[in-house]
Image 1 (cartoon, helix red, strand yellow):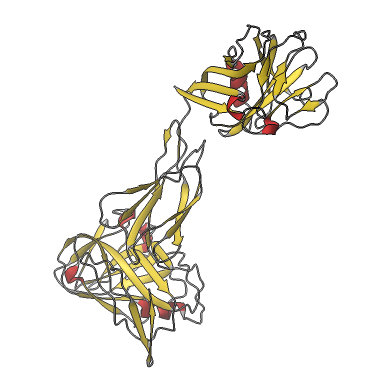
Image 2 (spheres, one colour):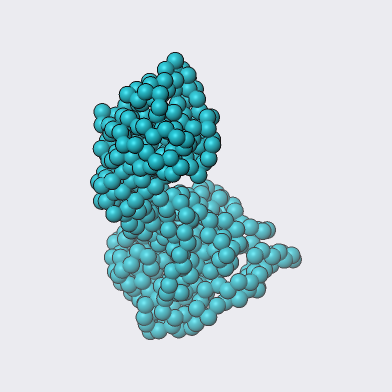
Length: 472
């Protein structure tokens, strides 16, 4: 069982109506009898989901004075999310009422809160209205026409907010919300990553987030504290690969997580192979292609290709650094592998046609990666900024959002085994691109390499035609 409690929280959310139709919203107390036939109050942010079972529901009023008589009929305002009260003549009596009602006829005790009879049927009717959602408001109407002029008086919000009208709803059932969809990351600064997503089905009260440094093995939890569709994770480390995922929760439980998705902190764009035909291995001896392997061995008789969709890098942007990340699962970490990019403005998916990889034109600006320091798990290549620069500089032209192919050439024997998309979508190849600074026609001459193969924080220097510029 779950219990929701709420209270009137603003001056215009309680009031009374005289028999002449005059509405009073800022009085010190509420009178509801033969001379003041109607009263009403609204409770905001009622976090009770549609479809739950109401087992108990009551109202509580703080009575004051000397009179003790009650003889009310209580209704709900038959609207899924009612507005605050208005001073329009006869506003309260003109509100649509539920067919369900409750009678309150018991004498009260002044100087304290008094609890009404059950209003469960009214609350059940309100949450069944089309358009009802957790967080909506409920409004209750009192008709005191059966009382003479000796009705008890209760405290209004304007007299004492802490003694204003209250509600208690106990319910069971309901369901956890559906998982968010479309989680996406973006650069929010050198040490921050921005996340966005779309809420799933059902009522959402919070969106727990988790992030993990590649290879860390455990998740860090972040609680936004409310239902949101964007959030910025701060305090990260520049140049490090992280993974992010988000869920949705309410009082009934927590959804599955959407993600994880990768992002290299400080990069302009990070993406991951996202389908079976976007990674492949070619046997260079016979030209045969393999597109559905769960893992593949890089070596002296193979070349591998990795295609990244929707690469959001502008044409002719300065590429300051670019890295390929591969998840190693076995084999021997020795040898040097050339890494290049296909010289195409919008590279196509891989096919089973013979020599589909070796038949693709490359930029010729490959970078050599020595895998001697690589271990099991995520590893980072040498920077391939020159090859990426050649792709985005094409006069074809390259268009932001097009696809890019990275090719790992023949290396050493014995082989190094890496994960492919068909083996694990979350361990498929990743590409990260950094932009900024003068046009890069030189080589990286500074910076440090972490023992795990991931970039450690540092200053990278680009040398170009007699001048040097720094970035992050």
